[in-house]
Image 1 (tube, one colour):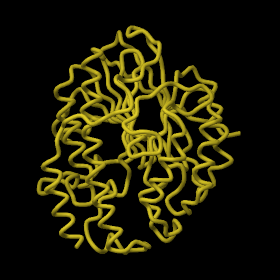
Image 2: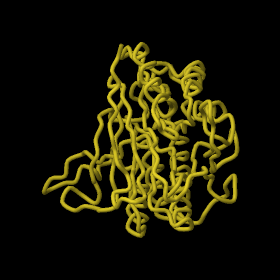
Image 3: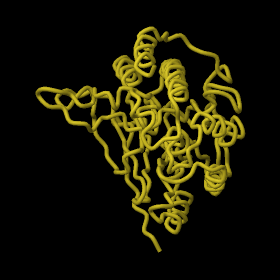
Length: 347
């Protein structure tokens, strides 16, 4: 059944349309910042992890971000570690963390809070039920989180599918957050992936694959809308934020490109679309993700031997390295995104 599902997945991906789907507002949400004005924003994620003993370190990170001059921050997923239970209190604790932020904070979901919740060491939950719960709890309004909030354009209505996908504009840049989590974007390839250390049965794995197909199509449409918004506003930059590392660091040898391996096949369609839109965009694109927990800035597309010059990948810090990244947007510079890691000293 799973092999038939995967074949259907490939067929469905080949037939995905780029037409725009309905959204919660008619135009992207924007803050009152001149297109010529410089400003900074923050990036953080993959924290706190209880198994790594992160709790005592977290207040220093929040204080560092709160005392900075950033306009807002974006959290790129994983509000807990990958081997602890996906109980309801995990989400309420995360809301308390985001509620401690003075400036607006935009939350993008990660795999640890829904994709992987079927694992026995995560409590053996129905991971699609956890996704529904996340959508109802973690997005209480159309605005951002944080003590000071900003308006966001959402792909779905409150509590519904794709409410987590957002677009907003600030100055010369359009920002987009998409639900693209680890564990191969929730694509299940074979029976071993379904049953290994998991409470899922075959029927649930088929449901996961159906969810992947539908969300991948929705993400493709949201990506199209993001770049259309950027063109409409004559934006100088686009920032795309996902949680998963889509396999940029897998080796490419003379014989095989591991970035095209089955284990990261759930990201292929989206990354192909990122390449297509970036090629057609006159400005700079910053692709942000977490998942791997090491700070890194590079230009991974098209390949190690060929560079897509106007796209930069930024990989954020994560547990047990509780730091954050400050990005300054300078519309007067050809390099509009100026990236600075912020190392947080613990008391």
